[in-house]
Length: 303
Image (tube, rainbow, N blue to C red; front, side, top):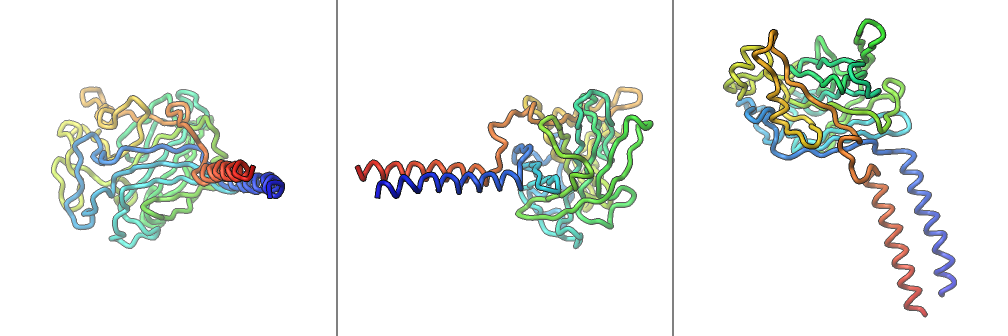
């Protein structure tokens, strides 16, 4: 019996390690980061519109961001407390959420764009982006800015071009966007992500006012609104040591002209997570450890 158990150990390890190699080769988590629950209030004061379509608490409460790759796609996943219903019958199965990701691929300050697509925010020049992803709930309701990949070309007169659509779906309160690797390249540990989420309106972020109404968000600062710099984001990722409300209130209404609040990218360098292995791989590694312990225990008892 002892010889049979000992002979089985290499086979068990080979099988498990082969499975790990397969999982790692087909799906790899590049970056992921959680976001606090309950901060779906932008600069700390925003409230949802009063209409019944916005009655799901947490529909704008973004809680987790993940970037992974498989053989053909870069996959971006945005998880919320709830996606709510699909009150407008949008094509991707959700109606309320709007997601923007601005990717700094080269980590060279000022080498990309600092603009955002209608969020009333400015990306930190240190995180200037080369690729932007615009992810809304329907492929046909986004004039004049459709869902898709936007590439900023610093070398060609700062021109930004639309590079095609994104595969979008929803699952378990997550919006999932799949972008061909051929469109944006394969992510590296150097990539940094400025992530902005908020209420969607037809092709843009939903308006915010001082008081909410059926379709308009409320809680905007009077001066920021009058100056045209009130941010339209409800939930963003911020680097460690920063506070979302403070970041979104960093606009300057006294400047000439008034300036938008500056948002910042997150990356492996800023967040230094303990592990970037997918949970499935971690589970398999755990299985290896358990198998070794079980076999060792049996051997000891047989002696």
